[in-house]
Amino acid sequence: MTTQNPAGSPPPRSERRQPGRSSSLTSPQNASGRPGSDTASDGPLPLTPAQAFDALYAFCAPALVRQTYLLSGRRELARESVERAFQLAWQRWPEVARDRDPAGWVRAVAYDCALSPWHRFRPRYRSAEPPPADPADRELLRALLKLPPSYRRTLVLYDGVGLDLPETAAETEASTPAAASRLTHAREAVAARLPELADPARLHRRLLELASAERLSSARPTTVRTGSERQNVFWTRAAIAFTVTIIGATTLTLRTAPTRYEAPVAPAQAVQGVPPAGVMGPLSPAEQELRAKLHHAEARGPERLAPEPR
Image (cartoon, helix red, strand yellow):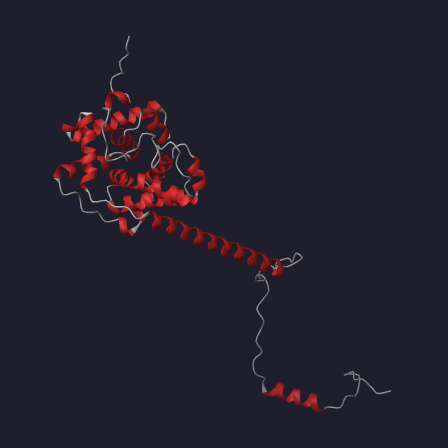
């Protein structure tokens, strides 16, 4: 007895993918499922970290640039997001190399960079880029950019990359029912603007055509590794300089700060109720005559007291 999918829910991967079908949004893999693995009987030679990183970059970067272009609608931002993701991967290479899905780790970081809302405040991304030359591609890209970021990401992962619904839900940090709802609403929104893309298989084919029509390139892996190492050196030096500044400021504060409490001086206040001081005017002639007489009179008699020598 077979069960049918509920209405509106996406079909499982085995039903929507035909054997041998290739996708330009995902890099081809060999029989082992890993990039660059050797099937010889003696086993592959161990790779250095730089060689393993270069192999992962060559395996994932071209497809990631096309995927992030569908998410952001900007060619330069797509390339920048992928480079930033691989720079972070190289900085954390021991962690990424031990991850069970290094490609998925880098893809999640690249998607986060491409969908970051802070790009709208950057001057270089305030003006619109030239749209695709094909009118049908322009309409499809416009329909994708009208979707909310979470819906757009779910649609690209499921219908573009070809992940299963649980994998899409895990990568978008959502539950499986939430991911299914986002996918359904995204398909309905695209179909409302472009009715000919109501079929998921045709939508998948059009996403591949849109991503492949643009001339999207990625930098060399050595350039990405060098840029990552330079960023590490820069931020290390910046952290050291900041730490030295904090230590210097703390030392200066300890040496110049008072060692005891000093009560603040109360602000001056005007005294109320005191009459203003009178201003003496010029002496009259009689007063001037009296002053002169007092200055020249002898210091005798009971009228005045004067110190007498012993």
